[in-house]
Image (cartoon, rainbow, N blue to C red; front, side, top):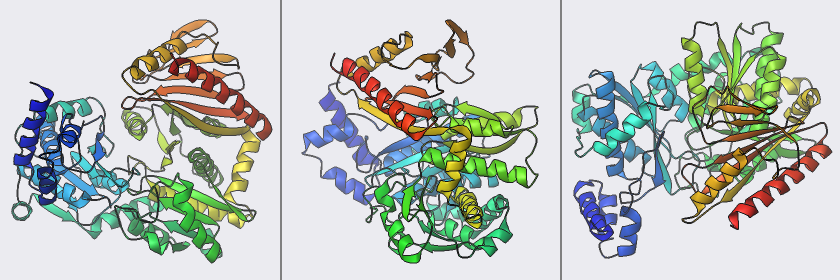
Amino acid sequence: MSDEKSIQQKYQNYLSFEKHPSFLSEAQQLANNSDELKERFIYDLEFGTGGLRGIIGAGSNRMNPYIVARSSQGLASYAKKTAGSSLSTVVSYDSRRYSRDFAIEAAKVFTANGIKTYLFEELSPVPMLSFAVRHYQAQFGVMITASHNPPEYNGYKVYWKDGAQVLPPHDHGIVHSIKETTQVAYMNPVEAQEHGLLIMIEDEIHAAYQDAIAPLIQRPQLIQEQKDFSIVYTPLHGSGLHPVQQALQRHGFSFHIVSTQTDPDGDFPTVSSPNPEDPKAMALAIELAREKSCALVLATDPDADRIGAAVLHQGEFSLLTGNQIGAILLDYLASRCTELQNLPLGSYFVNSIVSSTLHNKIAKSYGISDYRVLTGFKYIAEKIRTMEKSQQRSHFLFGCEESYGYLCTTVIRDKDAISTLLVLCECAVWNHSRGRTLIDYLEQIYQRFGYFQETQISAEFPGSRGKTLMQDLMMHLRKGKQDWCSKNIVRIVDYKSGKTFMDGQYEKNIDLPSSNVLEFTLEDDSVIIARPSGTEPKIKFYLLLKGDSRDLLDKTQQEIQQDIHNLLQKFQNK
């Protein structure tokens, strides 16, 4: 069948299946626009290993109610096939455009398949969904969100019964089931409620969540004594407002909220990007902090799984990087347990392979076991699950990744900006009581372990030859030649083969899933990681650098950046 006929057939199928009036009207207006029809229908929006994410709109290559329904039918069929007939699920959503509509659409399908569905009455963040899956002992969960992507995007994330995002074999099984789906079943929500298949979640789950994370606060008296320390928080128009407010109020923190960014709004009108990693997203909060004489600024992204921070230090606000926040939190949790004499035996820490190696040095200094896993918080959750199943005594202390994601408790199995925010606030208050800022605290960590600095270099390889050129580049790096790096490489880890090359010998000693990632360790313990994207025509180099002084660190960074720039030019110009 020609592309044109295939597009027309898919277009007509979409018109017959789409029930939402806005999306149906949008699709009907495409009838005579061949270019737009091709853009929207030549491909299907792919359900990746964790779910869907795409531009909102009518079409098979867009996020819309029909795509959500079809994916939900495939997910329901897979769950019934693998886990039995008496199932339940939890569905939540954030502040993005059509998020509630998509959540209701998913609930219609799940209930039609006989799956008891707990649907959040109001928007709620990722950590609340993860907690609720475990709380209700559901087989799986769905979160409607596109995290901190631009306003035109939305998505559909799938969680399994432990509250973590799906991993093999379930992710591949769900993808296969969706591809096989030809018919979608629907049940009216009113009918579903009458049959006990649809339960609306209200305040009880929020109270249970707050109770579950409350033990993370270990110095309540100190917080009451330091009322002069005040915080500014912004939810960036997302789902974090109410749970963060509840948490801060419950534990007696003094705080202010950016009023112009409190209303849930999928257009994110006050920011160019609703991403707490972006300094511009923090601007209004920092402005309010200056007005109210506050020393700490915190922001969560739309689904409240990531957190950003800015600290007043020597009269200026400094933004902390994701790795710096991770180092502060880990050292504080470990030192607090040591000081209060409650560090459990078998305590361990987990971070991703592209996160700062400073974290691992901190963990080791306290006698805490440390593990590095593949990129993606689901692998941190998988490590927790593995440790729980093992016979050895273990206690999860903390997990983090460089992209501003943290977890301080196992009652949730994904990034949690809300519970993390509590620990970070207590840490800031504790330092304030000693006349220090979080920047001072970070400096003390550097003085103990050396200076660490992380940065990324990203390069695109577009066009039909791009994928081949990236493969050639990775092949060149795998040969072990050092002609691309001016520093001496002492160790190479190939996460694809599971082998380490060191002292002239290869050893298969990496116990992680195969992944197209290469890691190079230099003489000074700096690390360079090469990681091509599996979905985009780009490759990323992560520079995890270490130095005895800031000047030496800056010099090393400049030299390695030039090395990588030269390497990329060589392959991009082929």
